[in-house]
Amino acid sequence: MKRTGKKAIFGWAMYDWANSAFATTVMAGFFPIFFKQYWSLGADATVSTARLGLGNSIAGVIVALSAPVLGAIADKGSTRKKFLLFFAVMGILMTMGLYLVSQGSWPLAILLYVLATVGFSGGNIFYDALITGITTDDKVDMVSSLGFSLGYLGGGLLFALNVWMTLRPETFGFSGAGEAVKLSFLMVGLWWAVFSIPIFLFVREPGQKPAPLQAGHSVKTGFRQLVDTFREVRHLKTIFLFLLAYWLYIDGVNTVIRMAVDYGISIGFKTSDLISALLITQFVGFPAALAFGFLGRKFGTRPAIFLAIVVYLFVSIWAAFMKSSAEFYVLAIIVGLVQGGIQALSRSYYARLIPKSKSAEYFGFYNMVGKFSAIIGPVLMGGTGLFIRSLGYGSQTASRISIASVAVFFIAGGILFYFVNEESGKEDLKYLS
Image 1 (tube, rainbow, N blue to C red):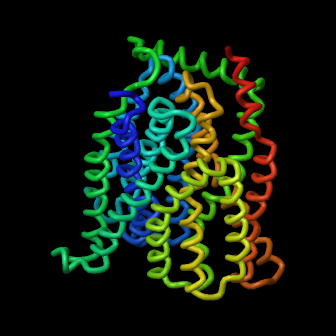
Image 2 (cartoon, helix red, strand yellow):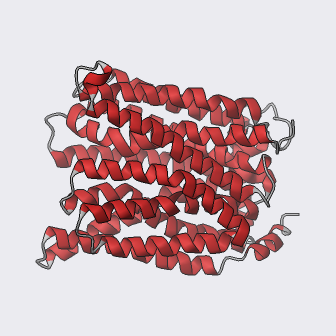
């Protein structure tokens, strides 16, 4: 079987189907609500929010700071699949462990959540890096889009089942919604484990034969390689400029993803409408991600990414004037049309810019940038809202202006991306040869 065969592509894409269940059911769906209402029962709402925010921040910082080093280590010994297995198993076990956490045990719940998030995010570093070994530059857009589309479909299917379980617990023989939510965490772990099998069966490790490095020597070698890469980046202006542009516009994307439900609640929409809209985004994202892969191949990756940035700019402005839940549903559909596309094509575009022999290390930088995104955006939203409130305006007005402030990320990111030139990037790589 060739490394670029259909089985390898299928195996690689199925990992997105597998771990996206964690992103939808746990991260975006149930954990924030269950943490506040069950594990932090009796605590002030602002206290429980602070606890959850701290947990998310800790997980993000751990992954962001370790990603380039882990990538350098994996590249040196060609052990990407081994690192992927380690982080996947960590994420799976910690997620399933949430099933056992009793009411009020918020420290244990947040610890397991942080470790599960590290497993999810850390595994994605090596999952992303494996794309350079299973396809060629002319097909990477479609392959990357296939992964994201299956992720939206798989994550959405399990999330829909989990939502049904919580809304109709008696149908499944549960005593209440709480029991259904706890079982959902167990189901996510099992789903993640079962559908991860194809990537380990069908995807071969690209590059050299794994080197028998000892742990201490591996870390030392990884740090040395990281320093060398920082020196290289000074000469790889195209990669540096793309990462800067990506940081800005993906910060806007992640802010919309993480703050949309909170914004909807702030302007008076029902929780049921918001959850339904989240499900719509998932299922629209499945065909839309594939469509963006086709657009990238037919008209070029750059124009397709620009299209997504413009749509997000429109969404961030329209959201500020939104009056009804029907408009929120429409925006959910529009976001679903471009969310998977901008993620998939950004990954494939970056894959063409980097040296293939160091893909895990360079994707470590890519994931580091991704993790540090959605830090400035929520802060900007919150700060803008507080400032508007201090001027004497109402909370809804402040919330509407705060969501509009996200537009600055799409404008700045789009401007910088305009100056990224793939052909210049290929010339930059000659510096390494």
